[in-house]
Length: 215
Image 1 (spheres, rainbow, N blue to C red):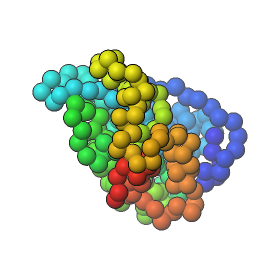
Image 2: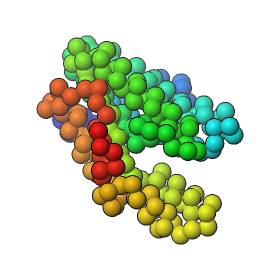
Image 3: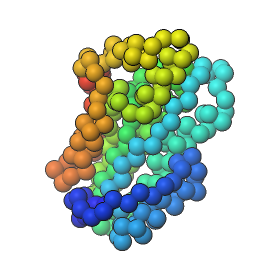
Image 4: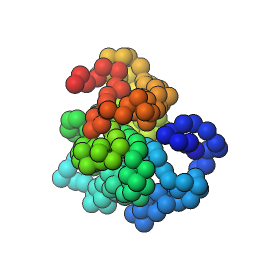
């Protein structure tokens, strides 16, 4: 739970919601406010799925699900919390983007296009909401040691009949840091963006990618 202006405190409560379900996305903000006993002040949208395939062969279901989970869900959940943030004159929204928000990658159209769209949503919301005291930023991770990356490495290894560790090393060839980024490192950047000291930072896509992309 979060106290005034994002101060840590209280118990942590998990609310399950399937971001592939538009109705559950739309209801999540209200549910969270009810459990917190007050309005949501900080929203970090980090839901994401990856579906692969060449553009000529994509299943429409995979495309639509990726759009719903990766970007439409962010729109819906934020719409449920923005009015209270605006009324309070303070709020923080952080969307977790991807290096695939910056360039195209073969066989990744559903993920890449949805992450580009999430970057666009971040920028539009930032200019709409800054006068209400709400900042909206994106965090752009490189290869992070998450369950999704682990699953992707395992899938590539199975398709190519290669050891998983070799695949992980191939992922890191474009990440000068030479190792996977830890989730806690990403969380630290998110926490900074959610504090008062980041009040003048909005509409930005801040990389934490081990030097993969210099912008």
